[in-house]
Image (cartoon, rainbow, N blue to C red):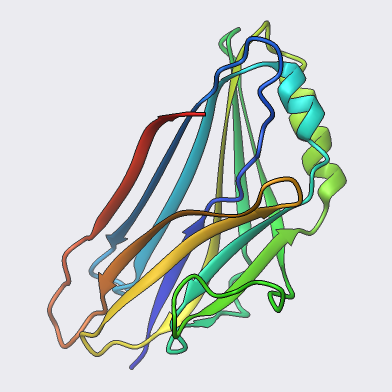
Length: 207
């Protein structure tokens, strides 16, 4: 029997720091095991960029961004669970806007894997104009500051033999190149036992 791994990787906004903006950037990556049921581990990677201005969002809303996942060959991308990105914008006027966008796999041939023995998967938005329009619309409701959190999810099929695996989360932008967001390791289910949750958290960094 094979178990399903739901991987979440951040589709990050690389926001400029114009004017007096000094954004706070935090990234959290962890695995949560939902057991019983399918016994599938859920990998969540979420990046939040806070204390940014509407101008920062508007100036970068059209920038092309690739979300990258590097996994071992024993993990394969599921065709039955389309990848998605959830974008949350919170304004200093107390409003929160949330929208989910479909992602599509794109060629990863130009990227060197994050670690030896891993395969790279690259994802982009299926409808970039819709993402840009949402960001600009939400930013238009802010006074002078807002925060943007972006989380993407992709599902992989993996073994259920008690083996250990590591997933790497990265992003690519034309202006910043490839940046590593972090990694998370987990032990695949084996037998009837429930594996522990492994958590990697990167947070509180100022850009």
